[in-house]
Amino acid sequence: MSDAPLKTSPFPKRLDHRIGNFVLGIFLWTLFRLYGRMRVLGLENVPKTGRLIFAANHSSYLDPLIGWSAIWGSRVMIGVARHELWSHRFVAYILTCMGSIPVRRHKADMTMLRQCFEVLNKEETVGIFPEGTRTYDGLLNPAEPGIGLLYHKSQAPIVPIAIIGAYAMLPRGAKKLKRSRLTVIAGKPLTFSKETPREEIGATVMREIARLMTENGHPTDPPSPERAALLPKED
Image 1 (tube, rainbow, N blue to C red):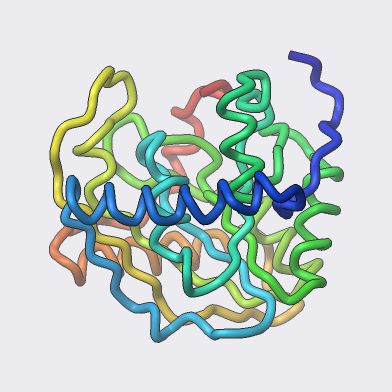
Image 2 (cartoon, one colour):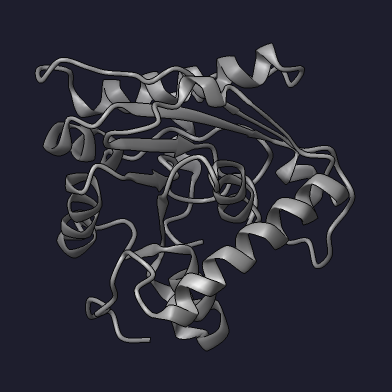
């Protein structure tokens, strides 16, 4: 697939995309509540209006679907997904229906940032995975600098999201789903001063995600900085 920026819209605009958004929302909401007995906690922490950044841990290919379905019906959330996924026609169509922004990872992707700002300027929400890639062992990875850059440029509060159970249901390398209880927890919005370093913003978000996981029955330590050096640059 070409590494050139994709000409996509963050929002579902065509009628079939809007219908697909509704159908997907109902289907995923039902699937994860029946198969994963999913609980969604902390939605009272999510403001009903205004720009927001949702920042979740990333342990499974299921995370975008779980996180999107947990928020669906409460807020319009536009997710950021890796650029390569648009090379698959069916996946690209699903991403378009959901509302998604492609990102070229491990580099400064200004097209992605402009689309994120377009969403936030409409007082909607953007969903990202600060770690940038899925965990290999179920432990949290350090955040990449992008979450701090996005916050500094938009001043949109960051809502930490803890997703528990996705790693057990479909870890890296697994070929089929394993039934596991899912829990999604939204924390209180985080704000920072303009002087806060990007690295500290990312570290704070990951500490909050670890705290939410621990307080909800899944003891988890914040990621150590040393883990960043152990991660490959390709997923």
